[in-house]
Length: 497
Ligand code: TRP
Ligand code: ZN
Image (cartoon, rainbow, N blue to C red; front, side):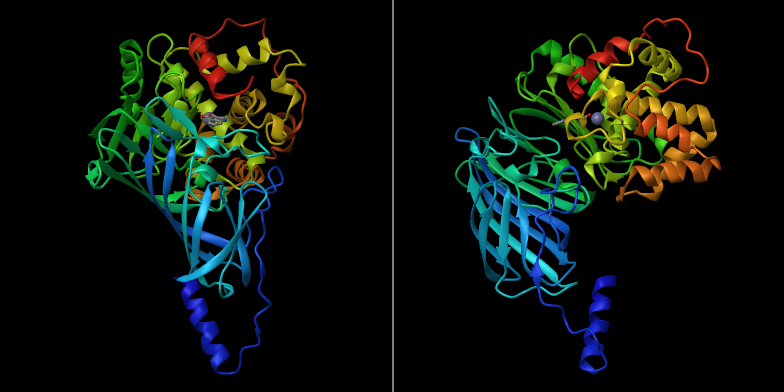
């Protein structure tokens, strides 16, 4: 609306002959959004507000066909623009006119509209496509991130996954709302983010039914997911009336199913507890999805509804992973990265939430967990040889980001005290809700709330690739906290050690 008013005023000025702004010559939009770690990820020159993804999928052949409609606004005069996408495109229309398109490299589609788009101009982009996603290997990565399962498929991954199922501006810096609708054979489920207003599939012809999901809050493209297969899907309601959609693969062994249910059915309780620490739950729905055995190898914090590997259930319940993935809903999903380098803002915070859960359950305090990691990691351990806030692409999901990231938060807490520490976390989640932020914005906020100079602390704990000294002498090697077995095995699956 603000943009529309600006455009009307600009038009009025031009008509009155008083405008000075002769339009610049339209130029191509950039192939990347400007991420130093991933220069090709995302694109330049426009800003997406909504994706409407309408697909049909056949598990037997892995054939995905469909149409994605993108609503966007140009941020410059555009002669052409890029989309991030790998499947075979049959047509592109921009603002109701056929556009030409060409592939550049592996995952870039260059679209040239029939008419240039003016700065602040609305763009409606309709892309029709089809393909077998598991066969589309990105040369740069060397694999397909699309996961085939015995009874379907999963589009669940990080940072690269969107390319295999919808065209996008694939970077967390450009968030948008989503409608995801997938037709699958009768008896097969298609699960995605947010809520399902129809409460179930709508029958189509030829033995297919259509599952339609809606995400009302801005979402990064990598957090959009679709999980297809034979699932037991249930709808429950939180105390404040939000839908909880949980889905368990029918292929899970009964014991695993029991352990997974004993963990994931506690999602409302866990997220309500997290909201006492981090502020109100940011989204309109909740839930969890558990994949068939031997398929997904990790968990991912998909917005409103994480996907979990069945491997998290190795002996009894595992609530650590539920705490971790749902903490990401505040840290990563609602407050999103501006650049991938700052990934500790997601993983360090979600790991610290696990420590807080351990403390709440009397299975080891956050201090116990800090002491244990400090004592058991010698100076040459990977936790110290990379810096959480500048880990390098190779260590993006390494222990320096997860464990040392959590240790950095613990040091901050010791320095500023509990009141200011939790005020910092809540203010962070509130000030950047549904937006993006950087490490520097976090460290500035911490200094502002606490009124302290925290330069030395952050330099040692976030920016220096070596083991920081402790001001208080570490005691003799402490015992492993009770929660350690579950937390460490969870982290073996979550990150690269
Ligand atoms: N972000 C996920 C978590 O900590 C873990 C993860 C790291 C991941 N790399 C991934 C998940 C790649 C899927 C794909 O919860
Ligand atoms: Zn995580």
